[in-house]
Structures are given as structure tokens and as C-alpha cells.
Length: 296
Image (cartoon, rainbow, N blue to C red; front, side, top):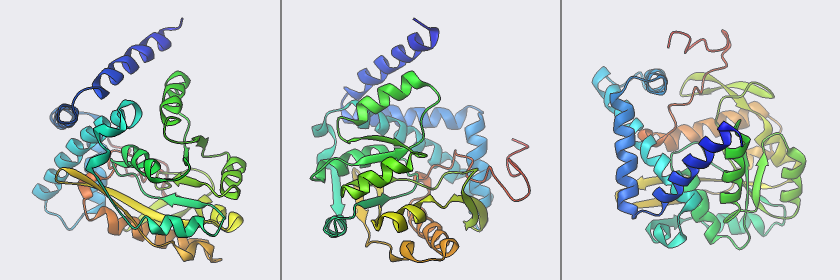
């Protein structure tokens, strides 16, 4: 047995124990992890500070500092929510979810060409995707990146299969198109930095390497692209589905991607602390890789 497997098995065992704790305890634990991340110097904190400085230049220095703090606390809560998504029972959280616009998904599936459920990297996305699957007639697929730790990846895939069909690697477009052809839903969160098959599209007025695959998949399959977003509001999670995005079926890919990023901006501004600012969204840059983060 390798050292990596021993470490991974140990961490997963702890995660499963945490997921069995009462909801209030899990959320409190997440907040404290976030507060610790704020207090201790670390690279993720520096990345969040840089991103917020770039994307919210209109905020004063104290306002930016407060947003970074709130973001790191929310990131900690998001980590706790992720553990719930993987290893808690449905009745622990499902009654705290509020849904609106689910009819847009039903309308999309009525066309019998599948549905791309598109969102951005909000902290709630793992738990929200599980809650959505509870509402769907058939379990969905999740499009994502394979983790470098294959042992950990196997645990996550097994946990997700409890509520979704399976995870599809982001490069496996054949499986994506097959699922859509079978009129299934696919969760697609395309707003991370990309180094291939992408265009530089403005995101909060910064050039962001934006993957073109969502447009190509929509055009190849004829599937509807239904955006959805989930935010924490007081003691509940609110999920809103918006009408299908018709512009994904137009020829101008750059225009479609710009509108997609603008939609993400509009939603993120509602609760900017709940977005994944600890990710190097602008890692690939026209002036060179890591241009905006090289001094961190």
C-alpha cells in the first residue's frame, strides 16, 4: 500500500465523519476554516487579493480587504458544503433549498436534444448540483477535470455516482455528445482558466482565457444551454434557473462567449464573496503566462 493511498484514505475517513455531524456544526467548521485561511499568510489568500483588486477597482482598499476576508470565509463554508455533497444524507440539507425556474430545464428536455446546465464556480456548486439531481427525473452527468490524485478521484466519482450518472472528463467530448443525444442533462462549469481551444474574452474587464467548447457542444448537439446559479441567503440556499441562452446556437463564437462571461459577472456581483476568487482565473494572459500573478 502506497503512502499516498494511506494519506488519502485517512483524509477521506475524516471527511466522512465530518459529513455525519449536524448541519450547524458542519457550517461552523467551514467558517472557522475560512477564518483561519484569512489569518494565516498563504498563496490562495494572495491570489484572491489580486483577483479582487483586478475585478473590483472601484472598491476602496478597506472594502477590498473586507471582500477578501468574506470570500475566504465563504470558501471555507464551500469546502464544508462539498463534504456534505459527497457524504451526507439528502434529508440533512434538501429542505433548506429553494428552487425557481426549473421549468426551463423541463422545456429544454422536451426538445429531446439534452440540456447543458451551465453555471460558474460559486462555492455552493457541488451541494447545489446534488440538490438539483434530486429534482431531476433522471440523474445528470458532471463534466469536470480529473484530479491528479487518482485515488482521491475514485472516491469523489463514487460519491457523485450516488446522485449523478457519472463524471465525464472535460476532454471526452464523445461521451458528452452521447449523453446529450440520449436527452440527458450535463453540468458544465466553464469559467476556469484554459490553455487550449480558448479565446481571450473580457471577464470583469480583464482578458480571460475562455474555453470555446460550450458553444461547439451546443451547436453540434442542438442541446439547450440553461444557466443556473445558487447562492446562500440567510439560512437557505437559493437556486435560480434562467431561460435557455439562444446565442449559443449563433455562428459568432466570440460574441457568445462574451455574453456568457457578462452573464457570469452579473450573477457574481449579487454575492461576490461566494465566487472562487482563490483560482488564478487570469493565469494565461496575452502578455505571458502568470503575468498577473508572477510576484505572488
